[in-house]
Image (tube, rainbow, N blue to C red; front, side, top):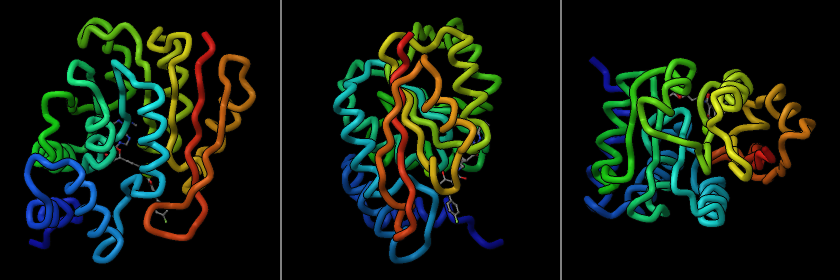
Length: 214
Ligand SMILES: CNc1ncnc2c1ncn2[C@@H]1O[C@H](/C=C/CNC(=O)c2cc(-c3ccc(F)cc3)cc(O)c2O)[C@@H](O)[C@H]1O
Ligand SMILES: [Mg+2]
């Protein structure tokens, strides 16, 4: 039967990237998506904004919601110190299989813990099952209507400490209006919009960075 888009993306990585070289993996995916087949990775333009926020926060613990093929997982992991931990949640087993291989090709397995399951089920288990006290950085890039409920769930589970940073992809396209309204108007957050473009296109999109004030 016909291959899937993630399978074709992985094949492009294995063909064009150097094993153990995360930058070449990122470049191979960006070239595949720009010149062969679009895919919903955060991409190179928004990826640079992601990189700058990760470098600024210099997080010891990171949570990513929605691994997909592992593109942003690799971008984030590459910037983390060796003892830092990145937990990424993915509930589609077919995507998880691909993401694991992309992360391995980039040589980032040590820093990444890909957990298969739904954020709604796993967030409440973070403390006892994964020994997490709080997350210094959360990258939201899963179903857009789940950003708000999952942000509230992380608050309720005590997973956000003073200074924790939420960075959300696609706040314009496809958009997450209820989440945007919440973080921009809640006294619990100081929020900032980074204007950019939808990956590999000229369509407007952006990232919203929201600092939890405790
Ligand atoms: C709800 N809890 C969840 N827990 C764990 N994993 C979850 C998940 N929800 C979704 N996922 C996974 O995240 C990924 C979903 C991402 C959803 N992203 C988008 O819809 C998206 C969509 C676009 C997009 C923009 C314009 C357009 F025309 C078409 C698409 C661009 C993006 O950057 C996007 O991130 C999948 O791998 C899915 O299996
Ligand atoms: Mg996205």
